Length: 366
Ligand SMILES: Cc1ncc(COP(=O)(O)O)c(C=O)c1O
Image 1 (spheres, protein in one colour):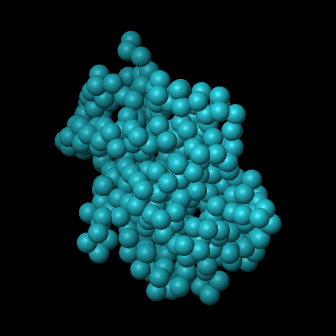
Image 2 (cartoon, rainbow, N blue to C red):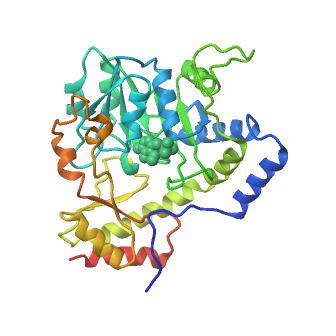
Image 3 (cartoon, rainbow, N blue to C red):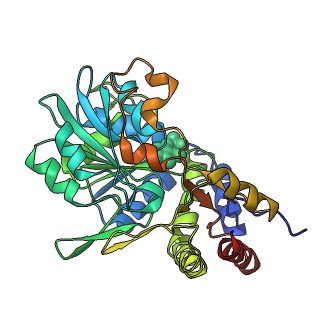
């Protein structure tokens, strides 16, 4: 039998190993030149003025909420079809996540549902670029009109972009603050846990570097409540090397997505993912929609290919939200699709033979 094809496979090169060793040998393990350079290079990649490397995507979300001065009693609208950290970061700062439904085609926030859920307590929306698909940029205007913040959860969207008012804008520049994750399965990683916060706002940019460093200023006085959310120099050095490969890796993911789309074209049992008009998908996951996900996963497993439902439990139905007022509310689109969306391997480390095996399995699914 051919080898198992996993959903993710971390990339590791000699260049990354050398970068890690050089950072270790330097003896400067924190607060050094790699962190500063990684911030600058990632900001350039996203076409924003400020970036700050931090300890995780979850840490980035908590920092972003604090940077928008969100706290006890405030409401923040989030999709329920996402990784739980999008919602729990809101709870972690004492605010209330308000769960909204997603769009039936693109699986990101449904703008009309968000509009209905805005109250005088709403301070912000966290939009998620789910699986690497950008959210509808109409969210930007909606938040501006209602004078509420927009936080981008770009944990899955390194390299995603969309055209807004005739201009191509990268994930990381589609809200007031954006949060990336470098968890090992993401489009790029750092050799451990890591995250990045980005913004085009000068004031937030200054505060962001401080809030992840105990709220300190240049004189080591703490100006606001912060904590240690810094990234180590070794991780920043690895991240810089990974960033050098990102464009090429995205190209591989996009070609693979095209190959899978052609494979499922005539298979009535599989609905391929849709791409939002004028957007470039980052293809963190390639998720197909099938009626019987357990049957599909078993079928792929027999072919020695990993496949997995994302996210079988909508956030508002997790036990952590058992006492949340929306725990028993029906979010109809989310609930009808959440058990039907299954990810198949699309990572940039796939060999041609592995890509062909996944494509053939999709084509032949019956
Ligand atoms: C949509 C989303 N938000 C937030 C996170 C949290 O990122 P991290 O695992 O780096 O804390 C993730 C990571 O899986 C994610 O996929």
